[in-house]
Length: 370
Ligand code: NAD
Image: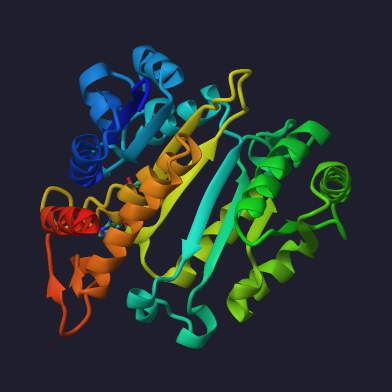
């Protein structure tokens, strides 16, 4: 392979470092057995960065993130930092990364593997073979809109204000990501808003429709109100391929979709920025779960969410979909063979540690070359 891909690894807090160690082993395997080359640097983010550098994300780490081809993040936070100043809380490091890298498209896949079908609270026939992708707008909308704030109206009365606001270009750039993803999947996109009651939703629908007509007429596009989408996700989730929606609705619908799978330790995510003139784009990959302080340091965490975040990196930043698939298949074979970390354990199967799961996946990777 040509030039080494540069990866900034930010393991963070809690189970972040132990999950990340297993990913590092898989990266080493790819280098040794598949001839790939990664230039990995490590940095601090979250609570550990507060302790050692006085801030949840130093300027130097931010610069390293900007110059890397992609960032892989573990998790941030934990009870020991619950009382730090709000401005430097661990999550502020994450938010700064997203903002400074301009990561406007958040990709959250929700897949149900046959081996884990009983982990879902829904009936197996509803979720079997589920494979949906939610694309959430991440840098605009009501979480950032102005005016915002709480004003005192006197007489004990106050008023809280947030503003839902989207521009045409903000809508079109995230919709473009979703259309392109749909093309690589089942070619179906459902755009979700509340055009019935919100002007920003009417604009959303109009912009997605016009982009569809201009550049993506081959993709099957549908529109759905967000409240209906929330219902459809539990009624018949397999009707969806790719869903694109705004920041607020995406926050909720992506968590709802995640729970269809029932296994937090399995769920990856990707956040992408604008394509640069050379075709590259800023990107950060991270598991959906947090730092799991209750099991941190015990070699119990499921490393697969972090590993699948890395396979998203291979696919979306490095165009190495074949290698991503090889790793995902290895993990699925381990699960099919009945080896499970504690979070996805079931009666009659074999419980393995974080390291044991790494060993098993590496074993399957070796077998894939035999
Ligand atoms: P959590 O996701 O850390 O944990 C929720 C439950 O799921 C825990 O019981 C945990 O043990 C379990 N769990 C999570 N990931 C697991 C894995 N990979 N393997 C096995 N079990 C797993 O959420 P929480 O407990 O609400 O938050 C803990 C800390 O993480 C808090 O400080 C929170 O702010 C932070 N957090 C960070 C992120 C992030 O870094 N993106 C996301 C969510 C929460």
